[in-house]
Length: 223
Image (cartoon, rainbow, N blue to C red):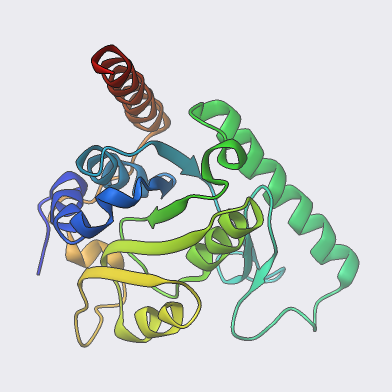
């Protein structure tokens, strides 16, 4: 299965999530590629949209190879090889820098803050796809640390082993496509898979906030 773009993928994903609408969820989308997908899902579920920016920590000798991931808050999540063999001082510095960048992105994008949005709520974590699931696991740790009552991961595409692993850690995993064999990169599941720039993220978050305010105003007027 291939999706025309992230919006089309979001619509297909939303169809798989209609059972969550009555639970008044909060959609937390991973930046940047998950935000266009999450925006469609949030609108379909009449839910708030929050952006979250997990950051990978790269190997000191091979920065493109992720050994761990972290969000602005929450636990550091190590990859399968662990982080015990790395210099603790280097690792602490890399963690601080990753958290600093996650914070900078949140401030740049605007939108609701994670902590005030998810306490006691069902959180639907959305991305445009999963590969190893490392950054998604960091996101799971972050929303739990922020007080989420339950967590669902929802993505258009993911490998079966990642889906099965996450399913043991959270309440539910929803994936529209689980190709076998997995092609190795999320982009293969899309016809158009360009970079999502910061302006798009800000626009979608702003539109979601206006929708939520309008919905709340309408509910108050009809009460």
